[in-house]
Amino acid sequence: MVESQKDSQPHMIISIEVPIISKTKSSLTLILKNFHAGYFRISLSLSSQALLWKILKEPIQDAHALRRVFSLMPSTAFTLLWSFSLLTLLAFSLLYLLRCFFHFHMVKDEFLNRVRVNYLFAPWISCLLLLESSPFLHRTAICHQVLWCVLVVPVLALDLKIYGQYLTKGKRYLAMVGNPTSQLTVIGNLVGAQAAARVGWRESAVGLFGVGMAHYIVLFVTLYQRLSGEHGGGVPATLRPVLFLFFGAPSVASLAWGSIIGHFDSACKMLFFLSLFLFMTLVTRPVIFKKAMRKFDVAWWAYSFPLTALALASSQYAEEVKGAMPQALMLLLSAISVVVSLLLMVVTVLHANLPFLEH
Image 1 (cartoon, rainbow, N blue to C red):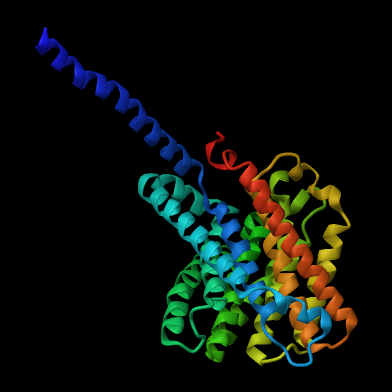
Image 2 (spheres, helix red, strand yellow; image 1 turned 120 degrees about the vertical axis):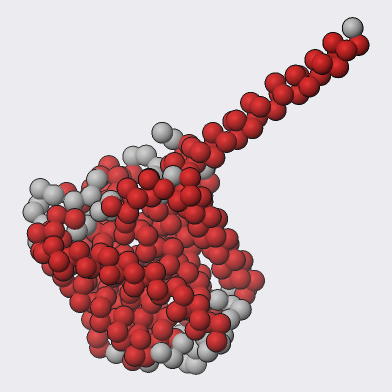
């Protein structure tokens, strides 16, 4: 009777532990299957917010009173935001590496997808933005320059893959696969150019800027000529927020060229006004985004980064053009960017169980 009790005890332990382990494995498998490159929209938005906060906090001589308000923000808040952005990017990168290891066929399908392949630029753009806004590394430091080289290599590799297809397969191929998210390929080059100019590598910056702008012109004309029946530029209704990239790309271009030249010249101003016009064109047509807002989706984060890029460009414009109107415009766009990002964080936390666990 004693022996039977001893034999029964291990069986009781196994019957309790096996379901827990199997449930954990199934949850992880479900997360990895549902996780995709589009989630890097979140890290991209947070990284751009960190850069915005850093630029707004920088002291400026003869700054307007509205600009000096931002200098009152505690530096601890910026450091916490930058650290949170870095941790988010590292967490998403780890998940994607696990997805590559356990579900490589799904990653391969994503690489061939005309929308999601463009979001493979997002983690590298996020890294470059975090590198540029780092409170711990000086721009002229050797490690800063080495990190820039490491981060730009994947961007160039993706350029060769995507732009090479555009070149060899002709305009019909671009007209077929081109969509608003394709502008992320341009933004990757422009952010790389801006980071290169900040570390003092002007020739590299000019090279990346030239490649990015050449393809931006081709993409813009291609997408602009889309038939009216192709709603949202050929993307599903749930992905309509990516239309904000139309003004995000010229905003980043104005910042990149300003970094190369050393000041916000007329070319930067023209790109800024173009992005501002495209922004007004979209926000005055909210019906376009009606279907996308019916149910929460990670695509909502596509609103944040372009708004932050526009706010960054407005801050540079206000620094160059003194006056109350540029300062008020900067304050308005920066406030919109921060509020939208905060709302997205709150909504994402409230729906934290949906993105990964929904089938």
